[in-house]
Length: 309
Image 1 (cartoon, rainbow, N blue to C red):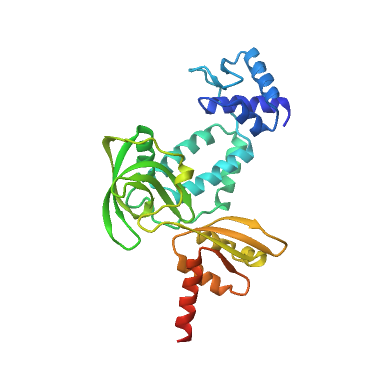
Image 2 (spheres, one colour):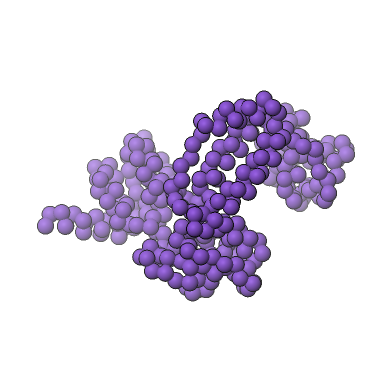
């Protein structure tokens, strides 16, 4: 990226966020901090009202707006791809908001690029795997609003065993791991952080009660469920098996892989069902072994014992 393109991109980045740290800009554009400082001076000398300093971060003065931006064909295609995913993988209200945003993006495109998007529309397909949004059309927005406003939410929740409970929660964040959305929250009933599948929420209400806790980062809360906790499982398998069954592995909760040698990889799962993984190991017994936890091997032995009876 040449300097002119980088400065233009920096201006877009500054308009998109309240404050942008110097180190973040340097890492994003692959340049030194000194280069970022020079670029900020260049923008300031060109009349862009930038406030902040090199040690903290930079921001545009409130009220300053750039003229309408032009999107490249590649950027527009990325937006189209995202639109397809959001329409199928989020609730109806969230999808509607994104479509409104896409209309504004299309309005900023040149006529030739609008035609390009129209012609390419049928070349991307995303299929819905869950019924999220049919019974609760505004679920995601309500959860995110409660987080922003720091308000307690009340939900009707059905666990994996079909048992229904009413929960008072302090929502921390939402995550998507194929094929489900999850809510990480402090649960008043269990008095601990729990992970709730959004498609098991039958009713949600944002209360007027304020949240009482300062919550840790969302990333630190992944791995808990109600009532069955996600469990970490580490397997060792062959590269060929990992490659040929990649989609199935992710469906079972694969989170990372580490290459051990030319033939073996170590796979880490966050699993809801140890039995499902145990049966998968059995199906690939000539290439796959369990590293941890030992409970998976216990389940395998129980399955084998039933087979020989």
